[in-house]
Amino acid sequence: METLKMVLMVIFALDCIALTVIVLLQEGKSAGLGTIGGMGDTFWSQNKSRSMEGTLVKITRVLAVLFIVLALVLNLKVFA
Image (cartoon, rainbow, N blue to C red):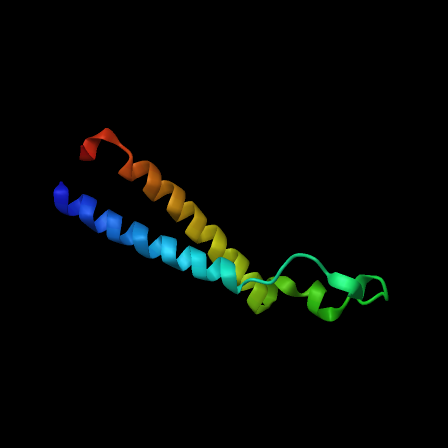
């Protein structure tokens, strides 16, 4: 049981580091001054889900769910 806890803690630590890096790689949500001049509705903004930014958002969601699940599992009294 102690080995399983150690493996889960290592996965949890790697997930924390990966989640931090992925969040820092993402762009801000503000469109800046481009929306004033009508530049807000571009080809890039319409196809964000197929771009690198869309991929980063999907990876962030998966890592966040993994983070929450691992945090709950490691907090169980089974490992105490």
